[in-house]
Length: 276
Image 1 (cartoon, rainbow, N blue to C red):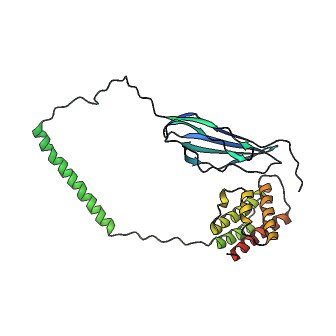
Image 2 (image 1 turned 90 degrees about the vertical axis):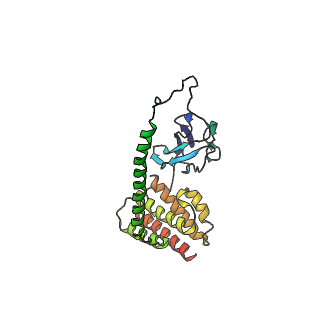
Image 3 (image 1 turned 120 degrees about the vertical axis):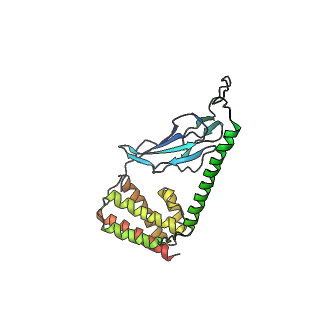
């Protein structure tokens, strides 16, 4: 494979839609990475932010351009700590970081000069009439308690039996998904994307590696400790990176390469299963 080397460098950007919010009010943090063709594709991994809580992390949006790839993610956050806080610089890799973002978190304004007043005027109550009406409330309260007791007893006589869901073995699931993919008529991007997803799900469930959140390079580093056979590990690393290039439309493989990627993914899963 031959790739043209561009002179551009990766640029990153972080923005918020507001720099001043009330306590508990949501704010939108947007992360963007513009990656040229000659740079490896990777994105931010954020689990926590000081003084802020995560409300929603949307999927990473990928746009292929004539110069490379643009990755964008929107994260909704909020804060329950009042004060002036700063979202720190986020590091994509060495010497590539975002700017810091100041955010003021405060309470809603309180008007001390506004007069206090009762919601309603005071109403005179007739003690005799109040005592007479009180019996109605006692009767209603007793009826409600009796109704709740009857419902409780009826439900107690009919316990709901839940059927346990069958546990699917990760290896069997992976083999079924590979066989299904082999008979599907998917285009090359979908084909390679599904292959890598099947492999990542197996690794996550069987080996406890959080492979679904990792970049290909980070995943390859952790897989190196699993494989004893260096040659097989290198083949696996090559096909994982090849599938990334196909996914982002940077390479069009031949039919023979498609079959080769399939066999190496399948063999790697079988090797890991036997090595347990």
